[in-house]
Length: 57
Image (cartoon, rainbow, N blue to C red):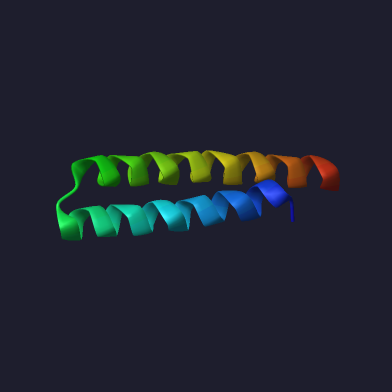
């Protein structure tokens, strides 16, 4: 497994946590940062998946 996949998954979890905390405390900025982290993590995870596929080919 490529390190980008692991890092990307961690960013998604971090983003979900930020969104949840932002909702609880009513912080819109924290929620939007969390959403951005989730998107960044998903992209990085996808890049890692492509790298894994290319290595396997």
